[in-house]
Length: 187
Image (cartoon, rainbow, N blue to C red; front, side):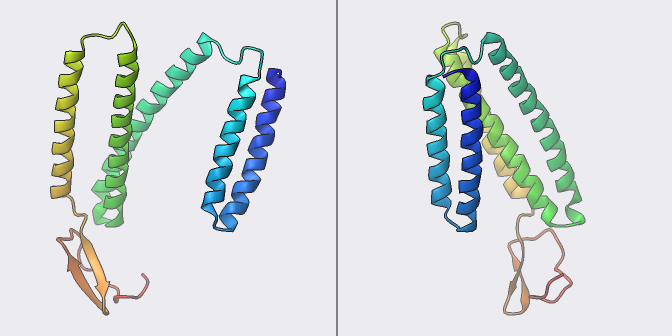
């Protein structure tokens, strides 16, 4: 198989996959969508192995690595700024605080996953620096991460007002004032 044939095969598989996933979502059959994605990915892997030409060289991999590094850095900084702004605007709308904390936790999770994947790749590399320093860094990082998470949890206003039997009831210690609209009525 040539690279051009492989490219057209990928396009055809993607088109068929889009139709199948669209129908699966309409039918509320998420298992069908998952199975379709797995079959399409497997089919692409099998077809890629049949290509006799070079699909990517070292330069392509270097560019992909640079793009991934810059994308992660830009997303982390912009996401941090957006989460900070959302948390600051919690007085405007109490829901902004939850969005801000969710985004902050997602960015933290992304950075932890990157750290773990980076460590795995470095361990497989023979030129890796001393592992003792990395182990101390990991332990210190996770202790700091736990302290940050605990601090955010203790100081955040994640609790809110709940509507129960036509009355607003405090759930925990909400940072927002009691809603002014009648309980059970839309804003």
